[in-house]
Structure formats: C-alpha cells, structure tokens
Length: 315
Image 1 (cartoon, rainbow, N blue to C red):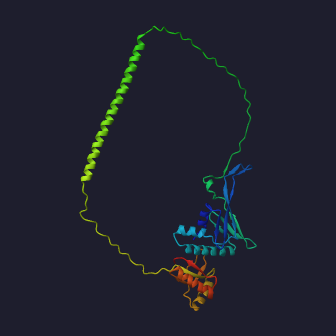
Image 2: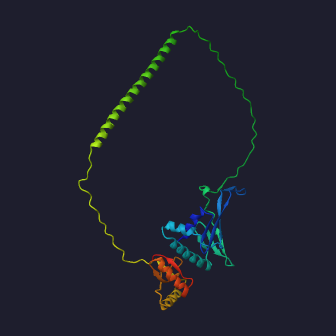
C-alpha cells in the first residue's frame, strides 16, 4: 500500500502527520517571496520538514486510511507497519527513498534520516491555483515632448428667429397626432387586460375538469408482479487474510532456512510471494479473524519471537 498518497492528502489539512514507528512530517507556512535578482515571484506555501523523534501513533493516518480504503482500523495499522518495515529496509541498504509529492529520504554517515522536500507541490489551500512566475525586466525611459497649446475657435452660427405667426396650424396638427397616440396606447392596454382575464377563466375551468376526472379514476393492478427469488451461492472457501510475520529476507536461501526451522518447531509456516521490493517474507501461519491472529501472535511473542507482527493481506 502506498501510504505516502494518504500522507500527502493529510498535509493539505494538518500541520503534523505522524507515521507510527517512523517519524512525523511537519508543515510551516511561508509567506510570498520576491527575488529581485531573477524577477521571480512565489506565492505563499507550506514548507515540509521531517522529525524522526515523533513516532507515537496519534491515530490520524490510520483512521484516514481506514476511511479511504473502507476497511478496519486494525488493518490500516498493520498496513502502515508493513510499509514502515520496507522503508527502513530500503534506507539501511543506502537507498534513496522517494515519497511521491512529498520528498526524498536517505541516511547520512551518522545513520540519521535526512529529508529533502519537493517544492513542486504547494500544500497551502489558500494558495490553490497560484504558481510561481517570472516577470520581464521593465525598462523605464523618459521622453521629453513639447506640448503645443491648440486653441479651437468655435464657430457660432446665428439663426434668425422665425416669425411666430408662420404656419399656426402646425401646432394644432401636432396636438391632434399626440392625442391619437395616447388613445391607441390606452385602448391596446385595455384589450390586453381583457384577453388575460378570459385566459385565466378558461384555465380555471380546464383545471376543474381535470381534478374531477382524477377523483373519478380508479387504479388497480390486474396481475401483480411475481416475487423474485435470488439464490446466493455460499462461499465455501474460508478466507484467511491475517498472517503472523516471522521475517522478511533479501536473500531467498535465508527465507528457506527460517521456513524449515519454523516447520520443525511445529508451526504451520509458509513463505508468501515476494513484496514489491523483492524481499521474501516468511509467516508463522494464517488466520480467518483478527482475534485469532492476535491471540497467536501474543503466544509467539512470548515463546519464540518478540518482534512478530500481524500482516493483513488477502493472498
């Protein structure tokens, strides 16, 4: 399971995401940056850091995985333990451990984890859609211009006043035309109101007839639908997804050697398929319920291997 995907989802909402037994990823808000030498602008963002001392299980990551995968909390815890085991193996072999959209992890000379964050992903929700950009250099030039005042002289044309006595009948004609327009407007409005009133009366009558028809209608089913009988085949195969891990080995011969020892001790041991890192896991046995596996694990921790743990996986 790629738990880094769920870690990245939580980094958008929380300042601290703890990976039980491994460490915690912390976020800190950084304000917008302006680089004058390169003319670049960067929006506010969350910077990611790693603290290997915070290892306690606060339940945040396991609960998020359980909800996202629609599985139990115990399965999520087991999946995290298995992934952490693979991470530690990769770091011990001097490998760089890349976590997608989060950063790279590696061990230094003092066997301390060094974290290099990725800068491409901004986990600050308020800066969503904002990306860094470069601005071209703005060159300012001073141009001296001579401003000439231009005076525009307005030409005033004198129009002689016409005699008020000229064409006196035009005034009465205009009043008559205006009166006709107002009368037409009032008449059209009255016509529209009359049409609207008649339309409402017709619609009311139609609705009344429809309601009467609905009340008179009688609904019945002549032949009821026959009952459908579904036959479900019982799954006789009992799934056993809970496995007690004895060890994971980088060399196959070491896994075979451990398997033979466990079989001589009376365990129903077997070797499962190699994981994605190419390691060879050995298990003490498989169980159908978590309670059975937990009971067997406590017995194995007490008598044979105190570091045995439960892997939840359908083989």
